[in-house]
Structure formats: C-alpha cells, structure tokens
Length: 111
Image (cartoon, rainbow, N blue to C red):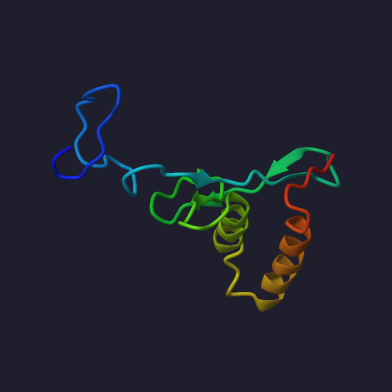
C-alpha cells in the first residue's frame, strides 16, 4: 500500500497491522518433537515445557531468526527452553551432552 505495508493478495480480512505475528512477511517457527520409549514401561514420552507466560504445556520451539536455518533454530530453541537447568550444574552438563548427541546427525529417528 502507500505506507509500505504488504497487501493481502486475497483481499481484506478485517485484521489490521500484523495481528499476532511478530513481524511483516513470513513468520517461520521451528518446534522439535523429541520422543522416547520409557525403558521400564515402553510407553511413548515426549519432551514438553511449561510456559512461564501462560502456564500452559507446549513443545519447546520458537521463531526462526533472520539468516538462521531451521535446523539451527530447532536446536537453539530446544537448548534454551528444555535445558534451563542453571540451578543444577551436573544436570545441565548431562543435558548438554545428550543434546549434542541428539542433534549430531541433524534429524534423528529412534525406534
């Protein structure tokens, strides 16, 4: 439009500005789904975090930064959100080791 804002190619939506988007244009997100089988019960488990802002359970993840690949974002967000273990240095070091192993080959599928 005349002010430099992008136009919706399908016409007006009734929304103004960015809505809930963080920025104009593509807003790519990356959310890793990390699972395992419980070694004792065989039940499928998934890594989830409790969001500090809402208290809701969620997958760790976030927005892809400019110049960052989706693979880099997945790892960064997983480390930031699931690995917040600053209160326990021993667990933090173990988490770093396991994260390094998990993301060593890019996408890892365990069966």
